[in-house]
Amino acid sequence: MRVANTKQIEELRQTLEARKELIVKNIEGSRDSINSMKDVECNDDYDYAEISSDSFKEGIIANQQLNELKEIEDALKRIEKGTYGICEMCDEAIAIGRLRAKPFAKFCTPCREIYEVERQ
Image 1: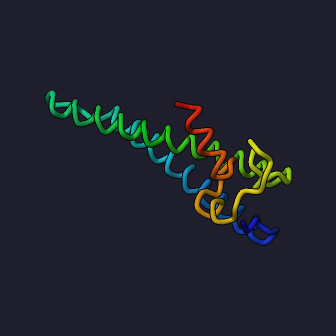
Image 2: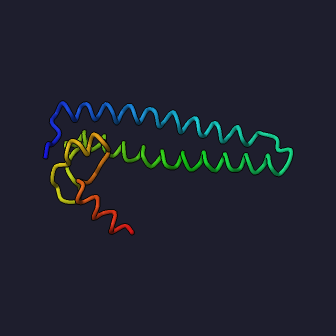
Image 3: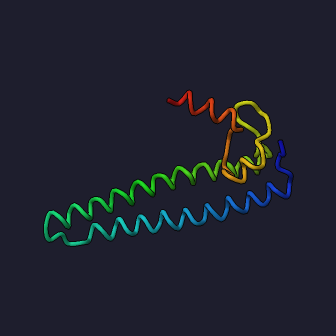
């Protein structure tokens, strides 16, 4: 298994920072969109249903992005502390391939599977 070296961790940090910036912009856009929907005039039940549905979808997307943002911020803190790329369950190195696929991964693949089974 290949573990992340200093250069790769820096590249992943940049990826995390870029994704964080994008999510923050998306969340701000979602909030603006939801707020603008509040000002829309409803002429009938169909208009109301459509606006409610759009607002609900925007809210779900924003919540998912808030969760991802939290995971990204946690990963950036682990980089600062020097614990990035170490599984929080078994303390073994997380494979570089897994980190590239999911830069905010907290668990190696075997521990992630255990974690997901335990959550059910």
